[in-house]
Length: 58
Image (cartoon, rainbow, N blue to C red; front, side, top):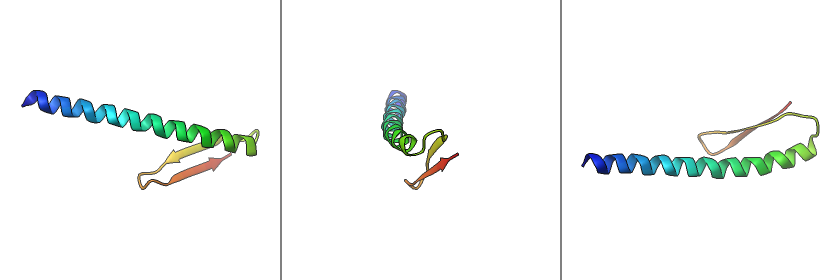
């Protein structure tokens, strides 16, 4: 039973990492597009827990 719990935790961690990679790819494309529109500005994109995004352009 302990092995099943450890396996479940490992699977959840793997899924979490995969989701982070997908979000990073999505944000990198958005960041690239915004950088083209706002050259010489720093772009910061934050994913919020509710699924929205906060975009800061400095």
